[in-house]
Amino acid sequence: MLWIEVDAQGRPKLADRQRYDDDDLLACTYRGDTDKVLAALAAGAEVDMVDAPTGLTALHIAVGTNNLKLTRALVEHYRAGFFPDRAGRWPSLIAIECDVDEELADYITEAEARFLEQERSA
Image 1 (cartoon, helix red, strand yellow):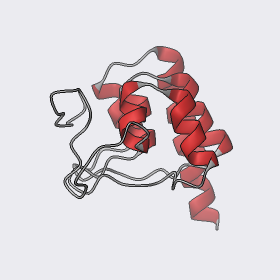
Image 2 (image 1 turned 90 degrees about the vertical axis):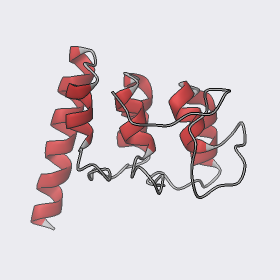
Image 3 (image 1 turned 30 degrees about the vertical axis):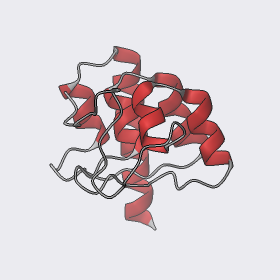
């Protein structure tokens, strides 16, 4: 389960922000609004933007909400980084904790392994 505190409208509370816009990257990711996430990224939003209190990124949230389509887009088209959240959970661990579909679990484990191998060889 993701550790995200939400407001009355179901949007993630982000401690470092005063207001939540409908097009906020992390809020859209949490809601599964893939089109808005991709539009924000195309407009220049930072793919590895981190929620300060939790350390979650769009990739962590997409995996935790079992969104294979968005996870693939973040990894393959926007080169999302792989790193742990503030609780030390990598995207692959979030996949296990959230009991995501097997296809997503396999995909994120393989993608994370490739990313880490590239980091080691760089």
